[in-house]
Each structure stands twice: as structure tokens, then as C-alpha cells.
Image 1 (spheres, one colour):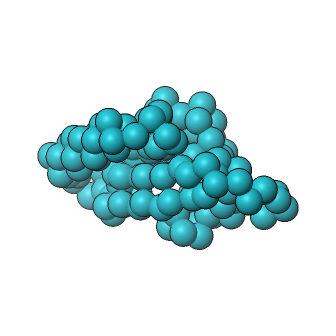
Image 2 (image 1 turned 90 degrees about the horizontal axis):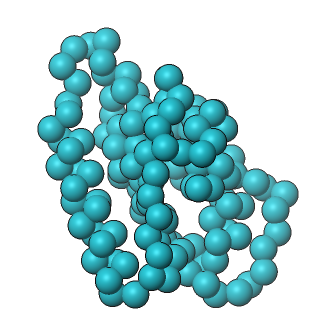
Amino acid sequence: MRTARALFTAAVAAVAAATALSAPASASEGQDSTLELMLVHGDQVRRTTLTCQPHGGTHPNATAACADLQQAHGNFANLPGAKDKSCTMEYNPVDVKALGTWRGAPVEFNRHFGNPCTVNAAMGPVFRF
């Protein structure tokens, strides 16, 4: 568990440094939406990149993830998620992290969930990778 968290912390630091170095050079580039998304579940650390407008990166469903982020105006706390989804009370913790830019503005989001189902219910396709 400690190893996964150490890798997670190192990855976050690397993405933060890369984001700081890639500040937009012009007003037209100020609409950049590039995010590094990470899931820490037990000893597993999974990550993907998501770019929006145009949709891409390594995220398996960039179109749906970008649509949800667009609806939430880039605010991860306001993602529509799957509101009709019910989850068990099983404790199987998952941490999620988003770091990068949304329309040129810096983004840093961290949240702890009780289990993978609650991640999907709250975050929808954004953290489904």
C-alpha cells in the first residue's frame, strides 16, 4: 500500500512540474484542457490522460468524459455521475486524482471513496478507465 501511495505522490509531482512548464504561450492556446487522471486502489495505481477539444489522450472513453466535464464546467465536484446507481456499503477504498488544465485554468482534484462503485456513481465516465 505504501509503495502505491509513493508512486502516486511521485506521479502527481511529475505532472505538476510538466503542467507548470507547459503554460500557454498565446491566448488561442489558453483553452487547453489536458488532464492526468489517477486511481489508487490498494496497491494498484492506474492512470490515463484526457484531452478535450479535441477529445483524445489515452482515456478509453474521452468523448463521454469530456461531455461530463463540459456539463460540470470543469468542476470535478459537480460531475453528473450516475445518480441512479446504488452501491453496497463494502469498504474497499479508492483515491482519485486529477491534475492539469481545464480551458487553460489549473485543475487539482483529490477525493477518497469507500469503494469502486461509489467512484463510478459520483464521477461517471471521467474515472472509468
